[in-house]
Image 1 (cartoon, one colour):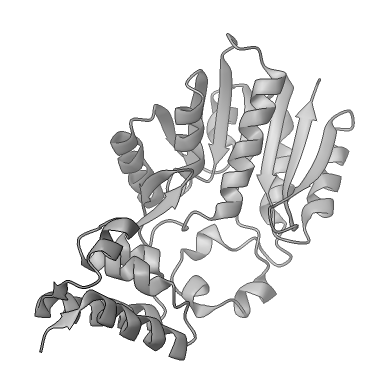
Image 2 (cartoon, rainbow, N blue to C red):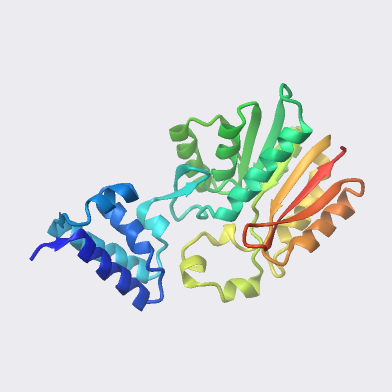
Length: 288
């Protein structure tokens, strides 16, 4: 017997809820099964019949999500700053709080650099390319570089840059070393580095810790390993006038701000809360 879209959607929603997964994921998976349709297109088709193949595929992808596979890896995409980015198991899934990091950094750049001024930006930890590609597309005067230690991540990001038409230079390397090796100076450094401590990783939801790349999550024993390394390397690559923007874990803001103040005593350093009121971003304005 054929099944209508709304009937299959109701089944998927309750099945996910019964297995402690977000019921809303049923809509994303249904849109994927129907060929990547928009939400409005899916709503128009609520009373259409699904083919047996479509319904069978829906059951499979719902089971995969219940089993711990993130929805974004199943559909192969995630929205970021109004654009669709391809994602797979080699990259961290872009989060909404990172959109806020990008948005504020773009505002800072417009405040501290003149309209005609060329600005050299480095995004450290490429992942899907969400940060670097968005910045390049939102402000075309920016000369955007991005670095990742994993060539696999760079390949995903390169595909996103090509599809979205972003001019970004990709560098394979460790943190700021590619710039140090070339004796290159930067105006802006922005990063969402791994910041989860070892004991927090142990208790993370399996949908994150067992599926997303651990190299993009683990910040060492206390979560601050990468920030410590940044404090050693940033003074070697920044211009006298520069901007720094970090995403941090909730509760890490004041500690990372303290590191920046110690490294750049004359900088204007501040913690910014995300839309949920958590201290998720730290910024520094160097050499005002």
